[in-house]
Amino acid sequence: MAETDDFYTRHDDKEKQNIQTTNDACDKSKRYFFIDGRRIAYKNFGCGENVVFLHGWGANCDAFAREMNSLCAKCRVTSIDFAGFGDSDEPSVAYDVEDYAKETLCLLDYLGIKRATLVGHSFGGRVAIYVSAFYKQRVEKLVLVDSAGVKPKRKPSYYVKVALHKILKKLGKGGLKGSADYRSLSENMKKTFVKVVNCDERPILKYIDCETAIFWGDKDDQTPLYMYEHLKTHIKNAQGFILHGGHFSYLEDAYAFDAILKAFLKD
Image (cartoon, rainbow, N blue to C red; front, side):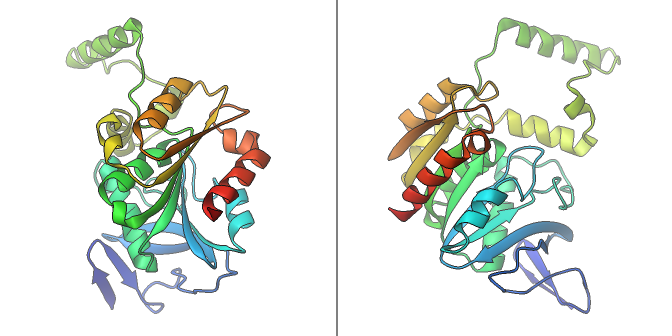
């Protein structure tokens, strides 16, 4: 028998042998639960205050493995393979940021986590921003790392390419090819990608009122520093920290990131 609770579904061991339901705080293996019949992978271990890590586009629940292993002695750490990434099934329809936010909340509900600190990198930052703005009762603190969410400044050539792509598609020419990463996606995930990257979260930043730490690489060319400045200016109670590195500054300047993150969580 399957027990359904809102958006997600629990399955007992007889029905789904691959579902791990252990609550062993030392078990760092990947576990699974179901959302509308789709398998979603996650990790959950440690004891203490809840900290939830949200990975960037193309990554998985091991993106913050170093930090999770470092914090698990004093925190209960959780990470998710977002739908379409890692070992999680693709969404049945094209997802947007709101859908990924609700999926994250489903995991928290499934694990009995009422309130947590969210740590989001890049695309994961988009999701963390959305949850913090509209489900603020679920968020203790917010940590953004080289986060997406601020509409990028585009050069005129970008809009020329967009217009040309639309014209070619109307003429049945298939449009411009796009990057290799984009071409490798399924049609459903391509539509998801377009929805996600076109989501401008600047209007909702004013709704975030939890204590926030923003980390940024001084050489980040994927989410440039003007995005950091905008987030730091428009999120109340935000502190900013510049790290040495690019878009993955939390890995490139790991010692500084770990030290500041632990101090922020301890306050």
